[in-house]
Image 1 (cartoon, rainbow, N blue to C red):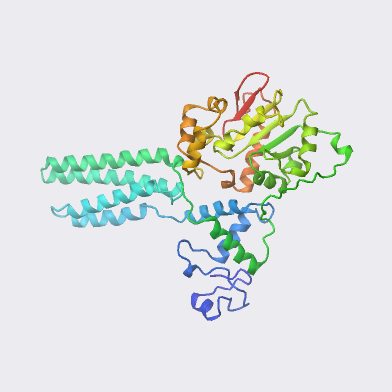
Image 2: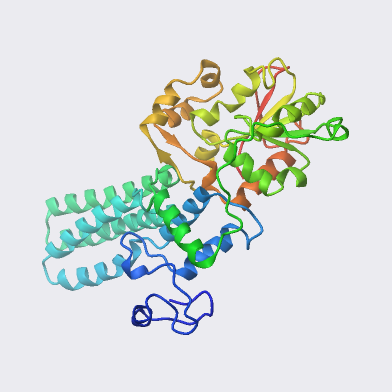
Length: 421
């Protein structure tokens, strides 16, 4: 493992002999991969992950975003079934000569089970699941071709039926799994507490990570704002369903670069919330952009904005739902980190009738199955780009190229962005 301080490559015996320090510069290593059980983390790997998620220390990120980022990086090294196909063909060729097909049949059945389970495993990423689904298709073709030839050579209809059935089933299941890859739920390879421990260890040795954000602070004391500033308003408002995402956007100067106000539905930042709302209500042409997790609470964000007197009850302003929505996830070609929980399923069944009516039957079924996706599963850079694209595409709400779908009655219009990035 290379030392991140001087670049010297230290072998295990060198690290052990020097009490976990570099043999050249004596800098301590934060991680020892050989002593880690579930996942293997090295210092260079962790340093690169921090640099990549922060876009070379130019963007702030949350601890949970780092959790998703590390999980994706480690998951990318997961099992792929293609590596087993060539050995399977070699063994099958030699053991099937002259008349025995017992060993190939047993091997094909074992691989069938492995590929099928791997193609829908929650511990693999979409790329690995896709590879295993394709391997399942190829295996089906091999079983179909080889089985037919063998059954004809021994003149056995029962064997012909077995091999054809198994080969067709393998091809069918592989094809079906390919169509469902993007909607398979996932589980983390490790926990938030583990990432917290890794961060603590890393910062203890290498110093503070400047771009990682703490939990949002509750500041109830109103801030003093210059009257000259409050005389103006904003053309755009971004409302988040959590203080964490609002803090992330503000920390990365999204409000300055896109000339908009940023608030959370929970009232963050509390110190300027009331003043900002007063400024916003002065602009009859205000556009409101809702950004939220794809879960029952997030899906209800627009409804809360339209029906809460503290927000925009009886207002004619346009509300644009940037996402995340179930339809965006279902339609996307790239798999997202979909999770599932009984609590989310129960909350979905208790959604207000107005919210349920704004969703399709497919979206309701998706939510009521307990599935959800968090905004923090996206890197800061990608999340910012998606929001910028959503705002840019809504400048002309009536344009056919705006990528917006109108939902609701005239006078209280809601627009939904049809794709999330």
